[in-house]
Structures are given as structure tokens and as C-alpha cells.
Amino acid sequence: MDPAILTASAAVLGSLVGSSASLGTAWLTQRTQGRRAAVQAEVHKREVLYADFITECSKLYLDALDHQLDRPETFQSAYSLLSRIRLTSQEAVLREAEAAIQGILDTYRAPNLTIDKLREIPLSQLHDPIKAFGEACRDELNSMQREL
Image (cartoon, rainbow, N blue to C red; front, side):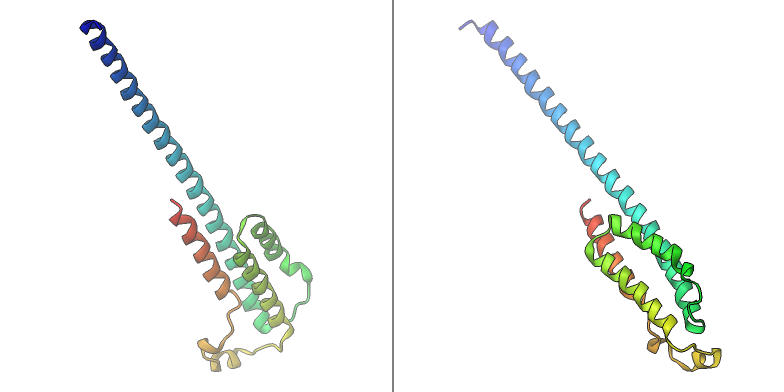
């Protein structure tokens, strides 16, 4: 075989291999960055949703300590947020969100507490219907972050 043809063939083949490697690396990098951005956007969306749910449930729980449930529409925002959680979240988060709503409803059904009675109860003995929900959310968000 002619040495000039062999040299030219080797150069062309080397260029093809080098450019293929560069293209492959660029494609893989773009794919990874795109996936990372999508997961980060989903994490942010859920953080906002969970924070809104916690805020609404906190208001309801504090109201339930010294009031009875007079109007069902009091739960409209919380129920709306629960339905949004149902659309996107893992089963553990949904289960704890439903339990938080049930805990608040149970508190509304219980006898009202006076301010003096609230002062006597240590914080550690006051039932927190939202705590397990927050922990489930943290676990879910941490597992999503680990995927990055």
C-alpha cells in the first residue's frame, strides 16, 4: 500500500474519531445539564407547594385550638393545596398531608382551649399535626436532590 494513502487515511480516521468524541461529550453534557435543570425546577416547585400547605395548615391548626369549625369553606385553601400535592408528590408525602388535614379536623372537634390552658401545656405535649408532613417532604426533596 502506498505510504501517502496510508498517512492520509490515518489522518482522516483520527479526525473522525476525535470529532465523534467531542460531539459525544457535548451531547452528554447538554443532556445532563438539561436533566439537572428540570429536577431543580421540580424541587423548587414542590418546595413552594409544601411551604404553602404548611402555612395554611398552621393557620388552621392555631384557629382550631380555640374555635369550632363553623364554616367548611375554612378548609378551601388547604384542600386545594392537598389536591395539588396529590398530583405531583410521592405516596408518603400525600399520606402525611391527608393525616395533617385529619389532625386539624380532629382538633376542631375537640374542646376549645383557653389562652390560660395553652400557657400551661408544654410545647412538647402539644400535638403537631404538620410535623410528619414536613419530615416526609424533606425526605422526598432530599431524594430528588440526590438524583442530581
